[in-house]
Image 1 (tube, rainbow, N blue to C red):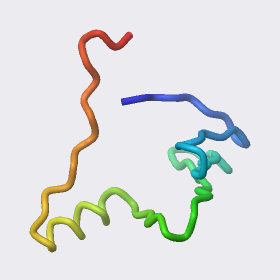
Image 2 (cartoon, rainbow, N blue to C red):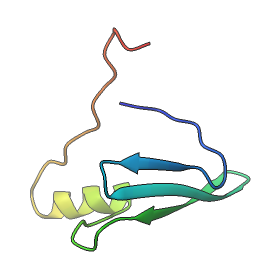
Image 3 (spheres, rainbow, N blue to C red):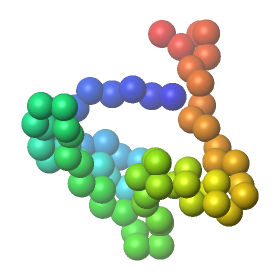
Length: 70
């Protein structure tokens, strides 16, 4: 697992073709923009888990940090 801090206007790249940008921060809400190819589905986490649950699948959980991670 990777945890990053970003300011408004800063980005995170996932692979070569997915860019995530922080566009606004207000109180306890962060607005992000995700630029990715159309063939890559993007869902909110709670919606993704519900889709998997209703399909009878178990969604993969995020990787837990190892003891050696600083």
